[in-house]
Amino acid sequence: MNDSSAEFEFESLLRRALAPVEPPNDLSERLEVTLSNLTELAADELEAWELGAMRDPRNWVRPAAAAVVGTTAGAALVLVRARRRARRNRPDNALDAAEKALRDVFGEARKLLR
Amino acid sequence: MSSPPKPKAELDAEFTELYRSHLRDVYSYAYYRIGNHHDAEDLTEQTFLQAYRHFERATRESNGRPLRPWLIRIAHNLAANYYRDRSRRPQTPIEDTDVLTAPHTTETLVEGRDELQRILEGVNELPDDRREALIMRFALGMDNREIARAMGRTDGATKVLLHRATRQLEQIVKERETAP
Image: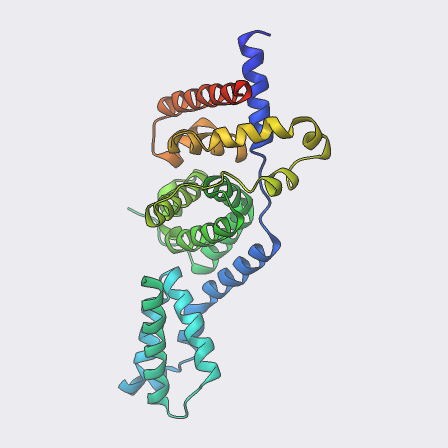
């Protein structure tokens, strides 16, 4: 066997050894959900607040947080988690809600930075 | 003068297309680089999150060139962090049974299992840059130019790297074959 055919045969073995690996289905599904959350997230957060409500400075906290953290993917995940938690334990008062949302955001951000 | 930024919806649609086209590439790269499915899943997820974060800029700066090398470069950097943080390389090169059952045919399994296994073990003995170049070429089917972009090298240097990687691997496999 000459050098070039030996080389070709070895490369063909290498191609078989390193065959592409299909990602697990649950990974694809999880990523699809995460990415679709990300694409909708910042807009949802901001749309949920009417402009009229913005006249009250007490209402600035949450949309501001959404605008800031909505710019990055990692931070967007923070909001997904914070929103889920907020839905589970929604306070009655708007100021409490804003403070709680901000606490959640910072809490989740700290976890991501660890 | 720079062109106006694309609308978010358009960028999101482009990102979705990128994700669907290259999920298998990123996962394959992560799997062969890290050596187990669990961490490969994490690495793949992190790669796409990072990619989403910087997608607008990458699209702007790519001048229409394919984004796969950029995506693989993100995975490469994250894999480097993974090893740096954990101060380790794969303990067992690859989860043998999984990799040999998922993508290969029965015929392959019967005929070449030992040989393929020796090659996989050999790949994991290579220096990082040579191993990565081979993964990109043979698992992902990237050409020299794409690999060069992913690794931040010139086309010429990449060609030499691939050649040396293949020759070194061949030598390792031969030594394993003749080892008592």
